[in-house]
Image (tube, rainbow, N blue to C red; front, top):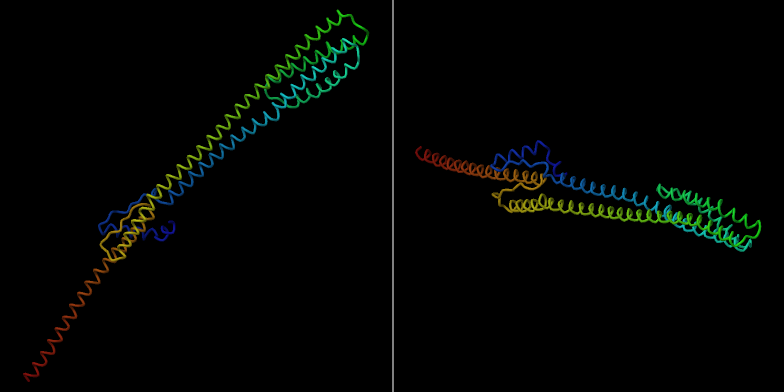
Length: 325
C-alpha cells in the first residue's frame, strides 16, 4: 500500500481529485485516519504495548516470586528444620545430665556432650540464616538466652556437683525439679520459635499463591487484549481494504469490458480511494478522448464529403464549359 501512495505525487493526487470533482463526482477528502498504514501501525503499536505490559508484569511478578521462594526455601524452611534439630539436641543434653545425676556414670555424659556440640552448630546456623522477621529474631535470641541459662545455671553446676560425690534422693529430686523448670522454659522458647517460623512459612506460601494468581491474571489479560486488538484490526482491514478493493476490482473490470458509463467509486482506505480516483480520472479521460475522436471522425467525414461534392461539381462544371465552347 505504501508503493501505491508513493506512485502518485502530491501534485498528481490533487490534480486527480480536481478532475474528479469537475466531472460531477464526490470530492475525495479521505481522512488520514483511514489509511491502512495508520491502522497497521496502530495495531502493531498496541500489540507491542500489550506484550510489553505483559512482559513487565511477568518480570515484576517473577521478581516477587523469586524473593518469596528465596525467603521460604533458603531461610524459613531451613530455620524451621534447624530449630527442630536444636530442640532435639537440647533434649539429648537434658537426658544425659539427668542420667548422670541419677547414676553418676560418665557414660550418660556422651549424649550431653554430643547434644551440646550439635546445639552450638545449630545456633550458629540459625544466626547465619539472617531471618528478616523481627519477632522470629527475638524468639531466636530468647532461645539462645534460655539455652545459655540452662547450661550455666543447671547443666554444668549439677554435673560438677554429681562428680564431687554421691547425692541423696532428696538432693536428686530437688536438682531434677530445678532442671525441669529451666528446661521447660527453654523448650517453650523453642516451641515459640518453631511456631513463628511456621506462621512465616504459611504467610510466604499465601504471598506466593497470590503472586502466581496475579501473574496468571496479567498474562491472561495481555493475551485477551492481544486477541481483541487482532480481531479489531482484522475487522477494520476487512472494512477498509478487502471490501473496497473487491468493489474497485469489479468496477475496473466492468470499465475494461467496455462499460465506460459505470463510475468507479472511491471508498475504504486512503490508498484504495487514491487508486479509485486515479482510475476514475482515466475513465473520464477515456470518455473525453472517445467523444473527441467521434467528433473528429464526424468532422473528417463531413470534410471528405464536401470535397467529394466539390470535386464532382468541379468536374461537371468543366464538362459543361467545354460543351458550351
